[in-house]
Image 1 (cartoon, one colour):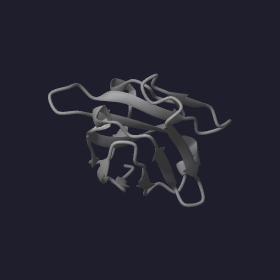
Image 2 (cartoon, rainbow, N blue to C red):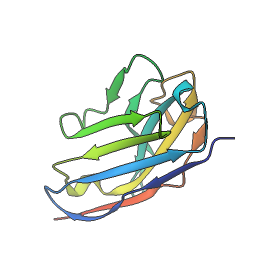
Image 3 (cartoon, rainbow, N blue to C red):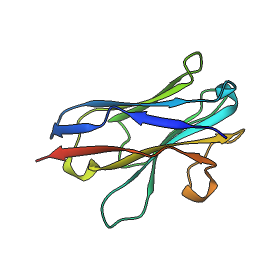
Length: 123
């Protein structure tokens, strides 16, 4: 069982930045593809960004390309999401997910989930 704990959310104005962190309990963190998803009130959870466990392949949702950056530090078992140029439509609870040996961009395919961190962007 992999425990994931997100942090770094908060309230920010339009155009501001936040960096989310997701710390994993798993010692073999490097074997897991890591993903970020988000869920706005009344909407389904959606894919934001993903990074493979090897090779550094990275994927973004079109809505965040050029503004968000996913990265990972395997030594710290942590994945990050740097969010710049934030917009009110980025307001959501952000979740990280871990999947062993695969890079996940669909909610149904993720194995482990964190509890989420709230990001609110004011206009």
